[in-house]
Amino acid sequence: MCGNNMSVPLLAEAVTVSATEKETAAVIFLHGLGDSGHGWADTLAAIRLPHVKYICPHAFDLMGLSPDSPEDEAGIKKASENIKAIIDHETKNGIPANRIMIGGFSQGGALSLYTALTCQQQLAGVVALSCWLPLHKTFPQAASGSGNKNTPILQCHGEMDPMIPVQFGALTFEKLKSIVNHDKISFKTYPGLLHSSCPQEMAAVKEFIEKQLPRI
Image 1: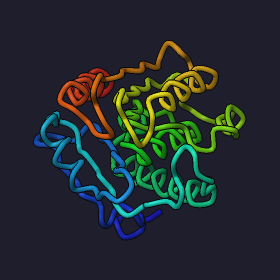
Image 2 (image 1 turned 90 degrees about the vertical axis):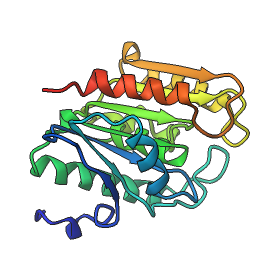
Image 3 (image 1 turned 90 degrees about the horizontal axis):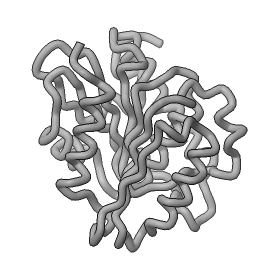
């Protein structure tokens, strides 16, 4: 793949929060249904680390990507390949895969989990907010070639989420424990939180990023 952004469909339009010093790590963060990369770029800028670049793609809305609707298998796989293309682009430009973290909120979190579990390169970590594992019936087989069996995963969920009930998050946590090293997964829930984030959750995300992507 050539080095310009136009060769990577989601990257050309992505909102990027550049590092304030030498970029030695990257976080790719995916928004939820009907949102865009701008909102999460602002949220991540508030917890940014100076050596980390944040990439927030938009326009990957998938049909029916919710826990109780028919799943868009082709769309999920295509979107996942587009995320992997961003990872490849960053590695070619000098940030190794083990210094790249992916994450997301709602359908973006679902997509980040699926991408990590089907990605051959070992990533730095996964942040999965208010989400679930899509195409869960294909696992653990679908993860047979994954390089992320020992990659840390931070799962967070609001206990009052009316759109993606916290039970889906708990079921996802149990499923993940059968796919990856269960010692590497943490599942945090937040009382009273709806289908959104909160300062305590973002503090946990910042701590997770700092731990997995330390300054080098």
